[in-house]
Length: 122
View (cartoon, one colour):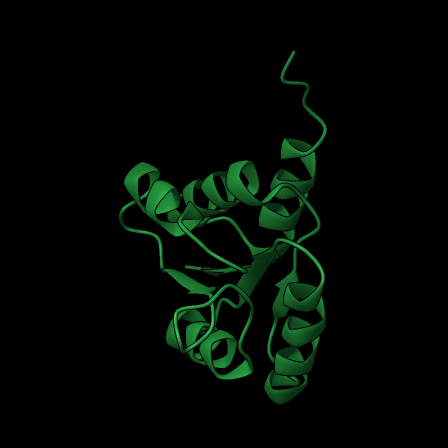
């Protein structure tokens, strides 16, 4: 299965994703080591390492330093199929986890996350 990593300044989205797809390999990397709001290289690295396997991983993120720090982490996993997904964090995380549990590929999950961002709420 494709691993799913959720990078946020303060992350509870992983809990929702795991409720919808409990068998999916989902890891969250949110907040700073002191409990503050922010992103941390080591937490993101550990989350990716914990779920990235032969099928790869998809990383969802919120904004700002989550993007920049995740890009730095990805440099450490060169040669592995680990991709950042451009889409909504909450809806995208749920769609990604369900897609992973269904056995979809990294590319299929990226497409599903992008599509989740195209919907309207009203």
